[in-house]
Image 1 (tube, rainbow, N blue to C red):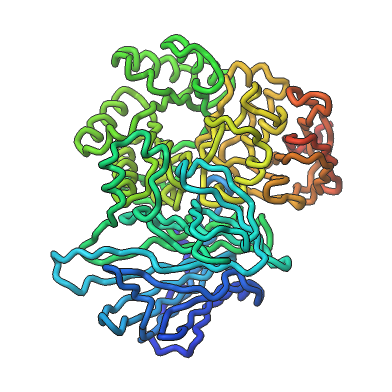
Image 2 (image 1 turned 45 degrees about the vertical axis):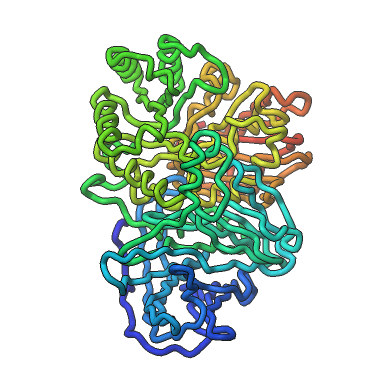
Length: 631
């Protein structure tokens, strides 16, 4: 599928009539570009003629001047693209299909010439700015943001603030009730009025630039901002000197051409469309064959499940970590993530752990503080040493900022780990922006309020993040615990999080002993970390129910996370194949959240499953097609 593209030719530049409209290949979504008073760039996005983003300002700021104010449109080039390629996580085949326009612009006051690139997909819109260097090679310029996203009145939005960086709890607000000045970490998801559907704002292709955040600027509007403008997060202020905090408040300067990341607006009539969108991956470069000769299938790039001794007990000793590898092997899990205790060990102990784990078909990832990686020579020496000792990957922690210098560090880490064949799990991280397409050794990243925290309740949060944070890409929530940390949620709810929270490196929070002793251990062992197909089932509602059907090969898993209100959900099975299925169904125990009821059933696509859910409850089922002739 990689490279199976066609229709990519561009038309010659011409002067457009305004408003300029670029429609998606299926014509449902349209991007309209116009000039408002004083020749200010503006845009509007519609879906089936209804507004997704109301008329809003466009612009990129260079050295304090918004080049979107007072412009002349000098030409337009149009193009179309369609390709399919291998991907991982939500599904295994991605579709990159869009209509595009490159709009040539001249700023009247400064005579700066630049372009606005727009791509309109069947499930959203992306745009970015390219500002060529028209000055001397030594002149530095400072870019900033000038674009706004205005949702329609009566929209409902879900977002969290930046105090915990990307580890926050989403709040649900009517757009009219959003206070001016509120900060929001992308993705910000909206339910549009009048049954129009849903939208979500984030970014893609983030490299050589600062990350984008959002700030409410007036009723209905969220303005794009860069990291220097946002308050530094509490985790960053906690771990780094005040001098570093102040330095990162200074906007980054550039020499040469300036190409912004893509500003992305996902849009769909239903939640299934948003969850299955490939736009963020599509806008990121494919992997470099010099590092990844077989792309995702490069031999050392292997998704899998991991055990982790941190949240749920277990001896934090060398022998205790060896025991975790032993239990990982019994579960059939592929990896163990080891926290900072490894730094107390000798190289001989590292080799012993690697050898012991390898005998059980378990690879080892080691925790590393990001402050130890700023020096390129030291970073490469560490990665070379770990690779030489048989370590398969690193968990890199405490980045907690989106300033350009931190984004540059992400890219340097991904480059150097790729050279030494190391997998990467980023923690204390920002939202993903498609990096894992370019660098498939990035297996997951945190950037989510997960089980490392102690929330008062989980059920509302767990049924929100699949439709907010996870729209940006994989997330290391470290799911599944059976003890008190799960709060009000049930055991089936906890197991179902492992099926719904997408993470090609799926790191379980639970002590593996509790996984092995759980009555549903056979289903837990069978849960994969990547999927061939995902369907968001009817009845799903942000903050109330997240119900997914996910397929790997011929097997289907049905997983439901439930919010704080009791209900019964009926799942129609028409998505199944033609053969009958053997099913293992793990249900809530109505009398005890720290228990589960397991059923065996024969199911067909003509049938359905009734699921009674307790408050904070859940459900998970494994459906295996019956072989021909089997009873």
